[in-house]
Length: 119
Image 1 (cartoon, rainbow, N blue to C red):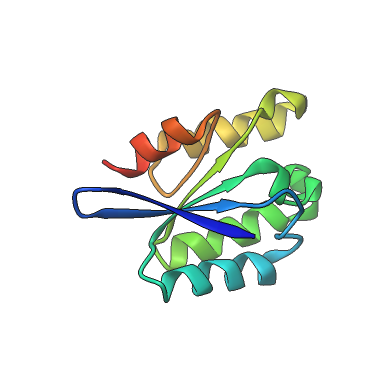
Image 2: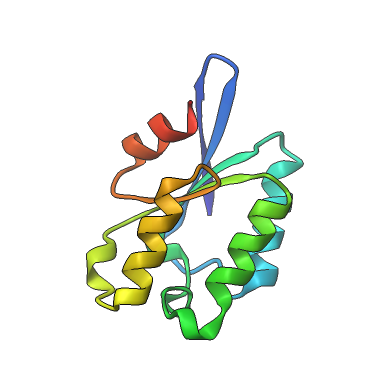
């Protein structure tokens, strides 16, 4: 896992770069958040392929647990990827509703994520 820093004005964003799954449960999501928070990041970008596929199966509850932790600590998270491959109506509605807010978003590119988190 590697961290790339994006900075614009006073905003510092951590982009997690990994080709392997690094978040398989809520505890690992919390640990990643805490590790980055203590490095002065409160805005995080993570690739969709680094999150367990179970996250996108809302019946598992993993998405809700992880997103609740990010919300509780007021850390903004953007998961970047192609979410059309998750065909369920519930996950698509979940992504749509999340993208209406500021805390957790699901976007297609890192550039979109940096732009959203820079506001």
